[in-house]
Length: 72
Figure 1 (cartoon, rainbow, N blue to C red):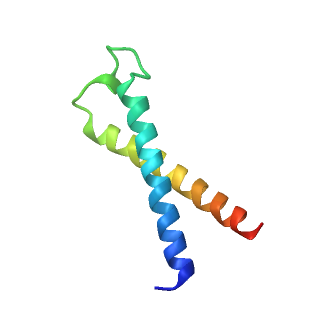
Figure 2 (spheres, helix red, strand yellow):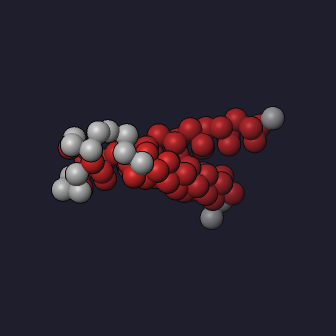
């Protein structure tokens, strides 16, 4: 595997994992009141979308920062 592809996949994976961990911490600590839809355990799709959105955003930011700092 070329070095750049390995670099990108590694950084995207690390960033996604950090984003998902952050989203889980936010979700578990209850960013919404107890009676709202976000705190109910019946909303698995909403939780999955929330985790994916945090993960993908942080992954792209982590990759962009890694590429930027690698050039310095």
